[in-house]
Image 1 (cartoon, rainbow, N blue to C red):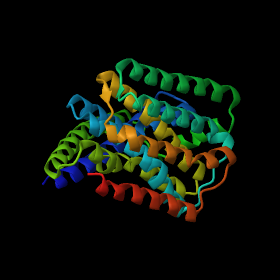
Image 2: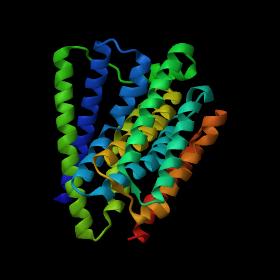
Image 3: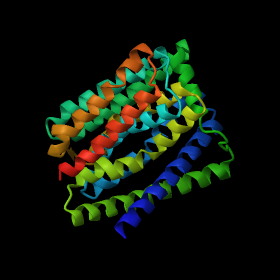
Image 4: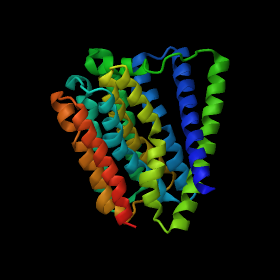
Length: 317
């Protein structure tokens, strides 16, 4: 039954995340918020909402390893699985001028996490710095985009248009937000509790469950966004959605989680998985710096690397 509850929690979480995203985008449009800001903030927060709710719920329940594993595993899945699948649908090419800034921030954020990981804990003050860094990056990006309207600003505007058919009707927005928040809360609770029971019965560390099953589940919104963008041949947006999600996961989700309670980092994550996350992040740099594309063969390699990573868990328990 726990596996059934896990799948059910995952489905409710994904539905809740999509509803909350539509409600948030609709509210932003109703308030006259620019498309660039919606793409820069609302879309990033929206696709990372499942990771945020699951991580905070896990931290509050004392299951910190699931929360931290969820973020590290989600970023690995974003960089390998999701971009791999996106490239299999359509070779991914991005304008370096549009994604270089976000790519640099992503690398800095992941590197900073790895350095903190060496200490074994994200303390509350560090969580505050992470959240403040994210806010500062968003504010700076907004004013920079508004002043220069360069390819990065255009990309953020296009990103906001990737959720079509959003209603600005007040009743619809309210219903979306209620369903979204309820779905995120209930789905996260069901998913975390079932994941804990599965780990206990199987004798698995909670971090392993967080790195794999939970991380895959919370990454489904990014998978959907990237797959749709790739199918529409909006390959810049496919890459940008992954970069934005990785930034929000590290600075936003872990930052908020650490503000709630200090987040201990399991030894297996500190010694191995965070470095795999960093390596997966660095694999994206040639695309970000030079504008090289990820063709279908390279997408298949990324996909195979993710399968190899998940399969290696069998030898670590």
